[in-house]
Image 1 (cartoon, rainbow, N blue to C red):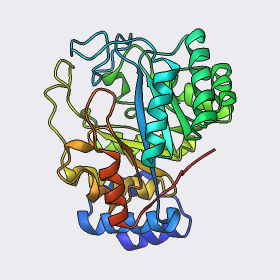
Image 2 (image 1 turned 90 degrees about the vertical axis):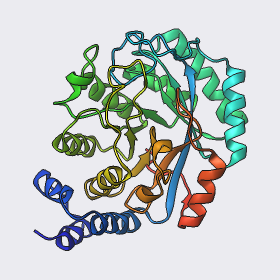
Image 3 (image 1 turned 60 degrees about the horizontal axis):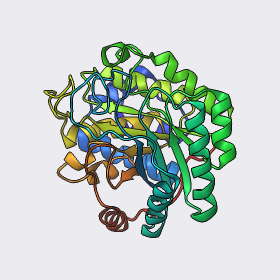
Length: 323
C-alpha cells in the first residue's frame, strides 16, 4: 500500500476502506497532511465555511455527557439561563452578518426542546431570515421529524447534532441517551429536508479505531459538514484531567478524515483556541471550515482574526454542504 496510490484512488472517485484508513493513520505526518490538502482542493476548491454559534439556552441539561460543562450532573459553575429572547438572538445574528459571517447557529442545552420552545425558536428564525438574511443552523437536541419540519419551514437550512464518538465508545461518554438516538434524530432532520452538521470530539479516551469508525458512520449518513472538536477538559466534568491532544494529533485526524470524507466541510470547532497555531496547520491539512467567535461556554477566536487568516491562506468564505 502506498500513500500516492490511495490519494489517486480518492481523486478518481474511490472510497477508502476502514483498513486503508487505519494504515493512513500510521503514515508520516507531513506527506499525509499534504495529500489531505490536495484532496480538499480537488473536491472543495478554495471555499471555506465560517459559522458562529450562540448559546441560546444554557445549563441544567438532563444528559450526563462526560465532557459537557452544561450537564446538571456536573458542577462546573457554567452560566444558567432560559431561552434567549427573539430580540437578543436577532441582535447577535445582525452583528455576525455585519462581520461577514454567512451562517449563524442557535444552540440550546437539554436533551430536546419541548414543542412550545421549538415554536418560539421558529418565530425567532423567521425574523432572523427576514431581517438579517444570514443562513440559520439550529442545535435543539433530539427532535423528531415533525419538529424539524417546523424548523425548516421557519427558514433554517441546517441542523447540528454531533455523534460525539464511535458507536462502540459512546456508552463510555453518555448513558442518558444512545448513539442510535443520535442517528435517528439525524435521519429525521434529513427526512425533513434539512442538511446536517455532525461530527465529534477528539480526546475522549477513544482509540484510533473509534475515530475512523465515527468518520465511516458519518460517510454512511451522507454528512457534508463535520465538526472536529478537540476536547477542552472543563474543570468539574469527569474528563477534567484528560491529556490534551497536540496540533500534530489534530492535523493527522483532519488529514485522514479528508481521505474518508472527500467533499465534506471538515470544521474545526471547540478546542481550536487551545492550539498554538489556532488551527492553521489543520487548514493546510484538509480542513476547510470553522466555528468562529466564542464557543458555548468557552472563549474562541474572533471573526476578524479568522477572516484575516483565511485571506492569508487563500480561502474564500462560502456556504458549503447545503441540502
